[in-house]
Length: 154
Image (tube, rainbow, N blue to C red; front, side, top):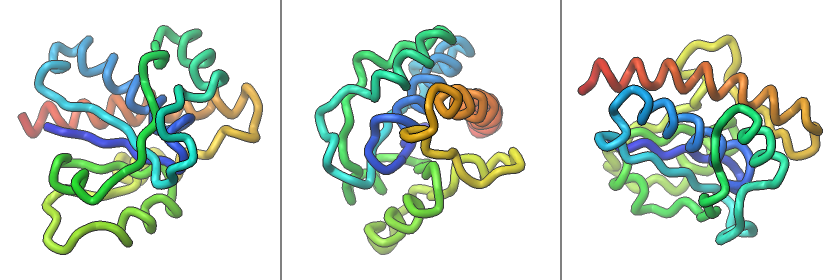
């Protein structure tokens, strides 16, 4: 199983989703069976570490995002990943626009897929510390649901 998380710049939401889900997958003994990555629809942060506030918030909950580096999503991702999960409607539209015809990978909104009462993971970039904590709350819940789905598939 191969999962890609996508947000705008790949420095806040999607690397946090990657870090949270990676830890959950390894804790469940499935880390070696699931390929987990993240990317952004934009290119302006390529090669950069996640936002320091995202890393600090994640670290407070036991997640390490320090080794992650931003990259831009590419057309090949649609064949490399089974499940591509967008953080918001704008990113979903951008992904739909570049998705090659006949691509097999599933594309969806991360939160909508798991019926968590919200469609979008809010962008915490301008929301302060509380915004990053809220993102972690949502991504932890969604990560548990995604893990349960993958267990059913394996």
